[in-house]
Length: 632
Image (tube, rainbow, N blue to C red; front, side, top):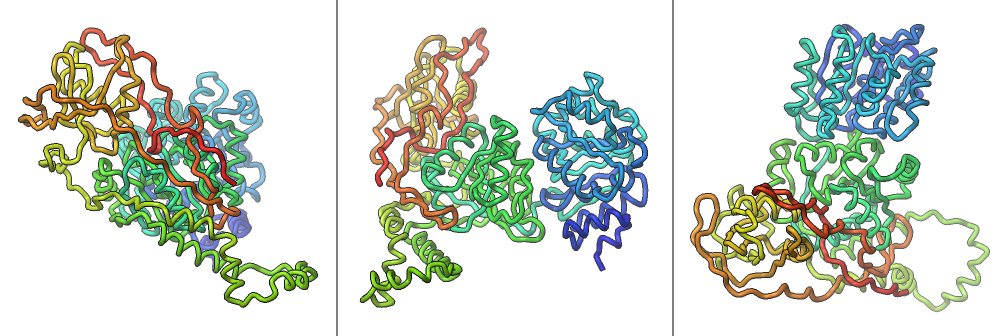
């Protein structure tokens, strides 16, 4: 007996469920569906992404809708247009045997006039993004004053995206006696505030531990130097030849840049971010679902609409600004009871975030090292052998076998195998046997507070800089630290030992940020004066007070930044989309494609206030190098 039959669903819904191939309800469905069908109630359901929340509210709302009444009876709010369309399509599939039920999607990027026309024809259920719904309310194009049900899907993500005011305004337009169903992966303060303001004695359902991660997802982190982040990504892809993954970046610029670089290096990759048109997004997602794309590089916002089965890995190329967002990322894999892996590529300055995430998801990360070239070669060689063994023979080649046998005559079985494998493998092994170890020298986690522990050789390996701005530019140690963090887009503790003098200052960062500091600051102007930063010989070892300010440390000698020596090796071409082989080059970034444009002048600082140049998006590590010609 199908377990859905025990939940109280109608025959028409059970028939649709059978067509969809659903056999057993997920935990959130098993808890929510009977509750929502049995009584009219408000409800809060806490469950991770990928646990079947759409069906958990979709089946009950369809069964409760009056199909003979063409007025809007239910409103579903979701964070992105992708998720909005996904929910709409699923509800249409659920209600295929329900006569007269009409579901309309309302989202930005499409004609608001056509959407209003679809609603006017009769839409019992509207699925909408908050921004477009608020726009339609303001224009008088929709009436939600008589709805019976309001559903907030991915509530925490909507609030993270800045929709709090829109959601409050929309809910204020709805009747007080409606039922509100709130579905969320986490319960931050703003979500709780929405619940308290607009819900009455809600039933609460929790799948797993509150705010915890999915038990089907394992979590790993790899500690690398910042300049090696992109190379580490490629090695992790090569170490998992059958990878089918979503790679997360923080910004649209980085997302596009990393995807372009992966394609240039021979990987089947594509970008998904907010600057793509709807047609472009649809094309990318169609290719990803069809597995023509193995690595989908996405922003957090764009990825909210990804509902693809069998994703093997989620790769955090950059950790999110909001730690809670990690839960949404990792929820892209390990769906429907299948196992998945969430990978974090992290630098030493970001290690503290790992502990913060562990506290939120209530799971431990396993620290691993980036595979060496030899290890990757072994993995790829065995994968190639398995691929050859499992290949189905097309007997159309039988007619050509006599000629082929003549060509290969005299070769032993062992020689034939070696030559056949070498055809695809030679360039791959030639690349990796020359590469260096990418693992950070220190693989041990730093405990909270270690950043201010005594450092070896005074600076403990940190880089100290001289910069030609100081107190006469209205900086003290705190405002200069804030200015440097925002200008360089670094973390709270990545800039330290800030020492401000009248006409100049000193500060420290870890060595992994050196290239970024030199490149960014030497191309910024403050009040029309070009900032100059150089690596200082001053050890910064003066006495420091409890705020980390230095009372000593004079001018010291200065030296220009050392030139970066060497460049990354060329990678072999990846043959096909699934074999793990790469192109025979490691191209330099496209002009303007990898780093934010630098401001030619910074806003003026008046009255001591700190107007700062715009933040730069994080690049994937290496500074731009001259483009190399392709070698065939």
